[in-house]
Image (tube, rainbow, N blue to C red; front, side, top):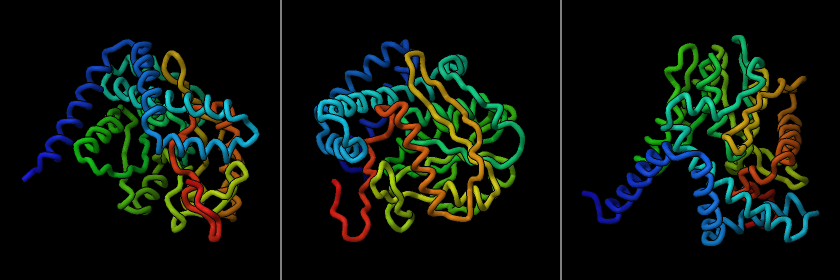
Length: 302
């Protein structure tokens, strides 16, 4: 039997989903305006996450002034909130509206049936990038999904990310982390590109320590590993939030990657990631505890 707390949680989640469904019909400028207000609210109220962002920015941009980093942190919260609200129209607006707001360029790099691992860094538009590819490119894409503890929220997110699974000639397939790597590799080898977001800290057991903005960071070496095991090309996809939606840019495949050196490959991934971030620093996912795991003997960051 559900407790009163469980009923309250379910009601809150259902109300949030209904709100997002309704928000899909609201003009984009108004959605973004609500996002500005929500971003400021989160910045002022959620102190624990603000301190995470502040610590990340201090480590990565020590040359900036306190005022510059504060402004960057505030803009980060605004972009984060706007991107979350944008999932309303990404997942519920008519397909023609979604296509009009997602400007995809460079997709010819993905043509053919050769195995491809897509390096999709954690910019706030990561769901927009995935939606653009699965809607507009005639290939069946795959990605890796982490289950949410809230089952109702989990079902809503999965439906949203599978929205264009029935696209003629294309589609979307999500693998749970608990399924392991074998089905992912099988799909890769069969010509289904993998939309991979490896720039996170999943603990030292699954990571190697390599520099990120000059700071040792536990980094999942899956980009190099998946590319090597499937003999796939690595293609970066960078998504940028704009006033009219998102620009999703498919960049040329990396040359001479992967190598036989997992550590060197992962360090190179972080190095190139820094260049992508520097072009739009406020849109990176600084709310993540990127430096939570520390090498032995180093003090905690957060």
